[in-house]
Each structure stands twice: as structure tokens, then as C-alpha cells.
Image 1 (cartoon, rainbow, N blue to C red):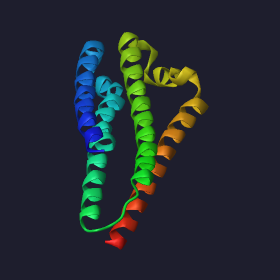
Image 2 (image 1 turned 90 degrees about the horizontal axis):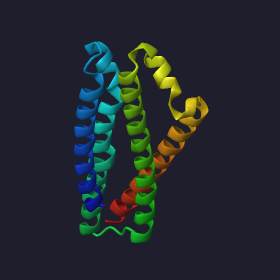
Image 3 (image 1 turned 30 degrees about the vertical axis):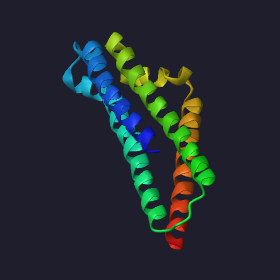
Image 4 (image 1 turned 180 degrees about the vertical axis):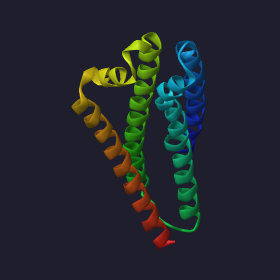
Length: 160
């Protein structure tokens, strides 16, 4: 878990560099207000990668360590399964957010006349249902994994 957090911290830094460089390359010729709006999702992907990929797993690892040191019992098998569900959901959500961010920046930067609404609506094969389904599954998995792991931690602290 702590190894995953460390790797995701590096990934978050890479997403930040990606955000800056892609935005500079594609949005240099558009008005600043449009560039800020177009690069919003990519900038959010950077912050979300830190939070969901690095900070939350690091906090879970620290709480797990404390619970076990206090004498609480935490089933490694259940903890691994719960964390795996969380990781799948968070990686899926982060990938979707990065896809949307890159898609908007590149498409709008390549053709600003199309407008941000048209560019945004063209993502996910132009299917609003596909977009909402993918985001829904990602957030559902993320939420289930996190709630499951926190429940395991609460039980471990009660036994301590």
C-alpha cells in the first residue's frame, strides 16, 4: 500500500508536467480565459492523482500500521481485496479524468472555433450514456473499496 502511494506520487508529478506541457503546446494561441477553462480537467487530474493515488493510500497504510501496533486484527486477505477494489476504481477514475482533460485540451487547441461544448460532447464517442456509465462504475468501485477498507480499520481499532 505504501509502495503504491509512492509510485502514485511520482505519477501525480508526471500528470502535472503533462498538464503544463500539453496546455502550453496546444493552448498558447487561445485567449487566457479559454485556455484556463480548456485545461481545467487536466489540472484537476493532477490534484486528484495526488489525493486518490498517493495521500489516501498513505493514510490507509498509516492507520493500518497503528491499528496493528495497538493489537488490532486486520485480515490481510480482506484488506488486500478491499484495497484492490479501491485501486481499480481510483485508477479507472483517474484515467477517465486524464482522458477527458487531454481530449479537451488537444481538440480545443487544434480547433478553437469548434467551441468547448462541441469538443466536450465529442468525447467518449459522443455518448453521454457511455461517459456517465464509466464514471459511475469508477466511482462506485472507488467508494466500495474505500468504505470496505475503512470498515476493516474500524473493526481492527475496536479490537485493539
